[in-house]
Length: 429
Image (cartoon, rainbow, N blue to C red; front, side, top):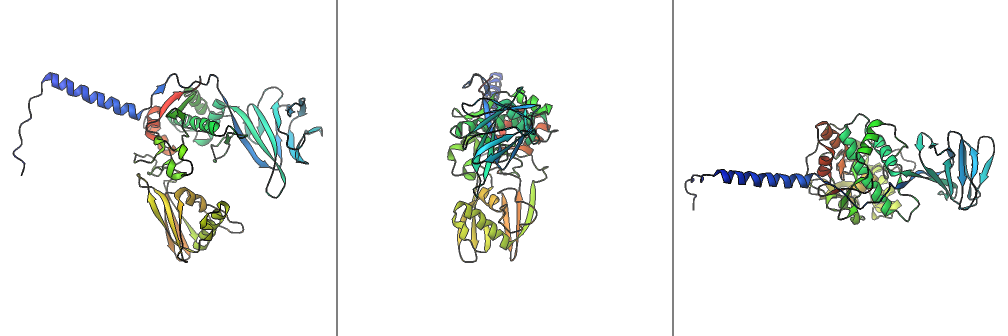
């Protein structure tokens, strides 16, 4: 039946208006509480500030450690050896040899880990990185059988976080953006500490984990670290791997689809969903690179051989198309079809890594594939790759956080935007 004529609305009493307003206010309050994580006090308190083990040198053939004057070195059960700085570390007969500039030195037996610190509890320095705390030096064997050195710095975590956010953000970015980055970086670091307890280090000092170039001097970084001291993102009682990347390009990724082998690190706050974005001012919001199709094939094969992946047998690609798209519209998986009729699947993140591979003896060309949110057009001998954003796209978008900070958004609200459903907890004072 067609609808009848509209009926007049019943009159609303003053009491009714108040009731409606109360309901609206309550609804808004609920929405805000869902978006803005509240700081829980107390959380699972650890007591005092922990230290984190940062690998600052990986398979280095030699290492130079500088200090103001003296460096103290010891191995398990050995007496301290004082060496005049700078100290050169090398591998000799499977053990470490530490030598000062005046020729004096100390040799340690094969396989021994050597602990090094400054005589006056000052910072040590490797290259430009000022490293508070102590260093653990271990001999390792490089590919080919040559000896090399791993160096792990034990750093108070708040000092580490200040150093990370100074390296990860532009120094002029808003203070609230620095605070968001501090909480995300601290959460990621503490989740890695839990995950890698049985290993010799917790985090790398590179983009494999988080960039760390030593003690920070940037005031904005130090202030943001202090303002959020001990605060982390949690979900279901566990500290989250609060992933972040440079530029989402408008379509975030989910942790589960990006790293399907690590489903334990993909709680609901890290799942893909549509959200407002603010990173269109990023220099890598959109990008394009061009390659020879033969080079693309060799890159795919090179990546696949290192992982024993079926893609190592790929022929000349004739199409690379999305075969799975997430709820935000971002490709999560691609299917590669070759000229032999073969068909291969690969995650978007692995495709990004593969298309940046450097096969030995081949000159790939300029420009890198910035993200897995991409489209590929194969035109005979040329392949054009056009994409959005920079990085894996999971969690916080740094350029979005910069723009939101400029618009006056507070750090808690931004964390609710990037990690909806997460909880803020202070885990030490």
